[in-house]
Image (cartoon, rainbow, N blue to C red):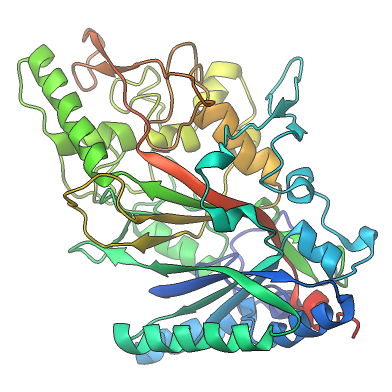
Length: 483
């Protein structure tokens, strides 16, 4: 039977999806849940047959959605997540070096161009006269790490949990085995080491100390049931149809699906961020007559406190179960959560419906599925700026152009979204080289319609160090490459 990608709330045991889940790679509909990872970028040679043979061989290690579900059941039963998890993805150059017929290539224009092509133009306008934009992410290749300037034909993710020393040894051994298997065929370009960080509540956090992945779209019955228990759906529907992230694999059969992948290595200036947050806090304190903390100022930038509490729902640091069950209906002017706050720029939760009379389905279709992991030092209070620490950002989506690029260009990098002079996203907003950001406006009084605004510039604490666009194919495609 054909699969309806408009469906959501899917049960992993649904007999109608067993063939699809056996072909679909894991990590797409549900995060793999491992604490340590190696992201291994590889470059293939010119022998197409040898390349296909090697990829087909590596595909035997890949974890399907079906197998991931079984592993998760074992984890719930025995409390161990010691199964190796593997993803395999290919870039457009990888498809070319495999000698795949052109009609079997994924056709997203960003995927085909690659992230290093800054001349390719993309239509990123929401309505009216569409003016295609080149380099919509405002990337500066001179700031990239040298390894990312090379061809990246594909990437393998090896992920594992367990005792740190044992896991690190196992992952290093897997990388060495992969290097040996590529001998005479291609080579490993670079390896990125990822690790999960947690706070004292065991929530996954990033290097600025904020909970990460809280508002990811949910596709599966088990996750939506858990979401309902943690606050309900009255103010926000966390569910998403499969077509937000899944697309038919043009190289597979009728039950074969894949997803587009955005990979960006983001270095974080932890010390600089909190120094600037302290300056913002002092500025607000001087203008309000009350003491504002740096943590509160940081929450204004992110739109959440470090534990995940939405700042629009609670004005003081604390715990709430409203991680996702909130919207901005009662805060249209950004008096509680600033309009430029990161969580509001990336997920407007009805702002575009009010401002532009845009259908809610369009706004919700821009969402992405984030599967990133931290890299580098785990120190959250480093003595120096720009330490080797940050996020290995991974997002999955059905369209790189209409989801990730649109979100980053039209919302995060746009100083006039939601309306004129809102300013950049303080975390990931990025202007073109040699352009200076305008100051954002910060309310003197949380939720007060009579409070004046304070002008203060906050940006530039995340650097893009390199990346690529990939497609994560079906297992049917990978395992049936002609050799």
